[in-house]
Length: 437
Ligand code: 5AD
Ligand code: SF4
Image (cartoon, rainbow, N blue to C red):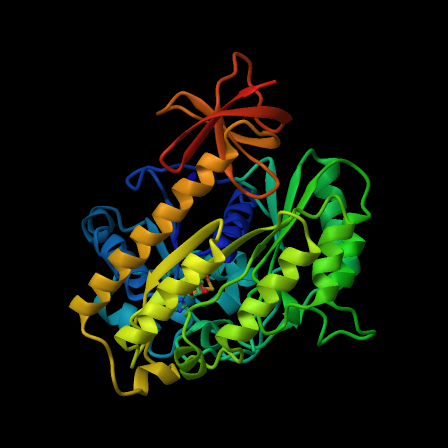
């Protein structure tokens, strides 16, 4: 075996877990490739949050049937949230009998031994732990996001929003100790990383399972005390749990970016109740006020979905008026997707696909209009960016300011990984351009 390929679907959590799978495979001296025919091991790290992510994975796996027929030695592994979901591992096995290994999110830390077992025995394997779960903390990581790095602070979710499959595939909340997290971040900074994103499904629950008790704001302060110039970000928060202490922690620590991802899901109190979000529209808006009052010029982004069961035209309009009122710095917009096993799946009043389509078009158009206006406001400002990458297609470098805005500019030398001051000269639609000063 010489080459491997890992295919990623889904969120930052999933992306970071792929970095761990790459770390495990490189530890076995395998080399990364994008070429399916060259790869001796192909791992699909799947996502099941919405039907289209699942459909994509099924399509990509199915497309390998011929390659596997021509080369029986090729190992095909399917892991992540999809097989972890009840009944899906069996479904995958039936649809794609050529898969060699099926493993769950709970089994990621054991991938090396699972792969070895497959090679030693020649037998197809399904490894899905339902209860036991080893946090994949001591797994080698092959990072692919320099100068930024993800660090898990906790796994799982206890919230049970009625649309969401995550609590069923990732289990209950478990926190890493602050000491372990601080050591990981210290090492990353020593190795030249300039931006750390702390990851958890609901970071506001951080530490509830630890003793002595420590909360997420305490953790942020500990990480922000680490020496060196770097930025600290985190995601995701739950609006019901965000409090003044967190806002003050963001305000009082220079390293913590003035920026928060604050997923609202719907602008309607009625729909929020059906979603089991445990806040009303008013309570949510009050927290926005608190954040903006406490942290000057804080950037606020959100997740919002249309077409949740029983969402009336009036409920949908509440989401539009909320976007108009808050003027988010960015919004991830979704169409509600039915997930079997969740409470919402069983509800009556599912919305017609055509209606969902009309609603998402309106929602996206409105947020686009807001994005364009906000981009224009940037013109004339000078901001410090951390340079992420050079984009070969457009010929510009791309960096982000502390508020998370992407800014494009030219440079004759390679500036990836540097902090630079950039003066914004132009906003073209939602894209922002500037010059190094
Ligand atoms: N359908 C559509 N969007 C969903 N999300 C989670 N579950 C679903 C679903 N069943 C969205 C939420 C969440 C984001 C990560 O994905 O907006 O915040
Ligand atoms: Fe991430 Fe959720 Fe997809 Fe799992 S199901 S990879 S947690 S987005």
